[in-house]
Image (cartoon, rainbow, N blue to C red; front, side):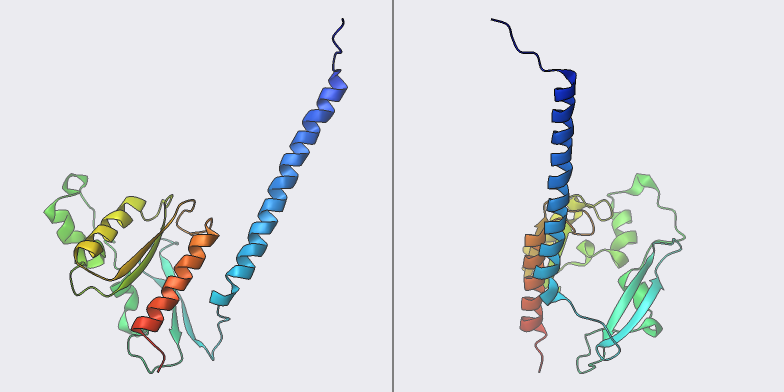
Length: 200
């Protein structure tokens, strides 16, 4: 009995169909993720305006182009702990850096290194008086190493600080690939605000 040969033309159509199916499923997956994200996370969004508060854009905390952040200060000034502005040098306080200083690699992990880094390190400032904390980290973060978040979680636990630690298993620094964890994180932030900063 002779075997039926698949001609080159039929094989080419099959490969093309597989490739087309792959791209179609990828496109549908991307669309579904974006629609799901925008729908489920909408309740955590605020359309910012002058009525809501003031935005201070591009506050510099270093010399690089990426060393900038935006600070949003609510219009409601009834709580002193809401925020501050550029005149209080919030950038220097929140995002101090070692700019202008060379760090000798030989001192990494030593007491001298800890002394240099303490002004800008959350980990090195944890004690029993540390404020309750909600933290979220992407497992593939290349900006803030994920391993540092594990040490911070341990330090908060050992100090008895009320905190929640959420790991985004498939995300980098932008926490972009884990919708379920993003919902969990937003709910944790809302719970934190209701418990520790309730609206009076």
